[in-house]
Image (cartoon, rainbow, N blue to C red; front, top):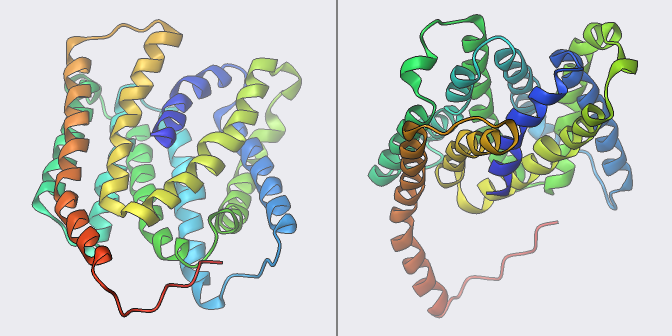
Length: 302
């Protein structure tokens, strides 16, 4: 829920900052700051060691998907299409994540999970009035859809790595790889930007964007995936456009329509449905824990 709130806030705060800052320059400066922050995190970590070379291909792939392709796709998409179309397409990332997970046989699809994901996505579409959003397809639509596919792949690629490395260090390494590339791509826009004309409010948003929706949110997202699995975690992404719409009403004085209310209820219903098949599994697990066990105790993760 905390991650959903932080990500939803980006639709309001980023639009405000982009009044003063070019979107690509905005992305470049925040990722430059995040890369520096990541270097500090690694330098301050006790007993730090480099990732296993065998994990390097997966780590690089996750970094490129989560911190390069997704972030640039998000910014280029949101700045080149309507907010409704962009939000709908970016919100499909849970569909991609679950699909990748099922194709890779990491998680076995359950009928209730499939139904919950479908119901949640339908709720997003109704909330954002998809029948009006796709009246005119734009280049930004493709960027947004590509961003959703990239972030879905990021969650699946990162899941095994999250079991072998502390979250903060894994995040730092991935940010250094993907964030550095993102910063380099944005250098021309940053050089062209008149930073002296940027307001104090926009600078505060840049600082928040550096720590909140990426570094902190990604760490919490990876932790949730490790604890609860792909299908049960990514469905919370459906709440992002719903919460973003609520924030737009409060802070940007936008109006609420009946379809948005219905869509929000469908999203919540989808979240409930995806949790139903797990209850039986938890009961079985609880019974196994209470029964005598001959297995050795698991070692703590370092």
